[in-house]
Amino acid sequence: VYIFGGHAGPMTLFDDVHRFDVRGDGMWQPQHCVGQIPPGMWGHSASLVQDTMYIFGGNTERGGSGDLWALHLPTLTWTCFDRSIVGGDVPLGRAGHTAAAAPPNTMYVVGIRNLR
Image 1: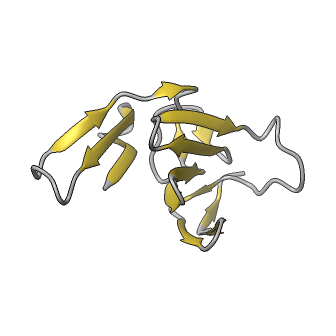
Image 2 (image 1 turned 60 degrees about the vertical axis):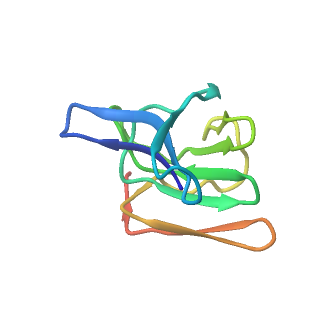
């Protein structure tokens, strides 16, 4: 089990990753990630597609986000697919939404609240 981000009140946003090994020692372990680390956020969604956890949307200290982030779990390397560098009809940011992965390489996001 991997978790990313969250908040403890409006002024404290987390940008950390923790892992719980359900077959191991039953302990949460902080993960030391590299690459372009996402800002602290909450209200985002996360889905696993093969060996990569994708994070979309959420709230940051700058407001709502429509960015897509990828954490390659074997190397713990973050990559950002920032709205300013991706093409196509980029969706508005979402918060409080859900996402689900579908084989072989698809992630569906079902929004609840547009952030713009």
